[in-house]
Length: 115
Image (cartoon, rainbow, N blue to C red):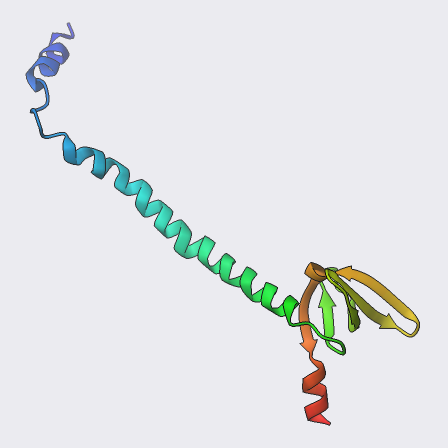
């Protein structure tokens, strides 16, 4: 009944000798291409963004107006190793981790040159 399937399987025969070397490279090519696309579209921009944020955090100085990742606006009053003291209102100071600073609205140098 299904003898035509068996006959077709025997007709295909064994693969030729020595012809399978290129197929391993071709088999890995889609994975290499997927990794390259992943790197170019996702990983590389994320790494650049992370480096820019680290540079911004390293360049913080007293008098900078900043916004934290929690949305608190304030002025940098003091800097310690990994701590930023932020003045958010009169007589209200908050200690934050440097990594919690999301953006710098204006710097102390920008305010001095504008005056």
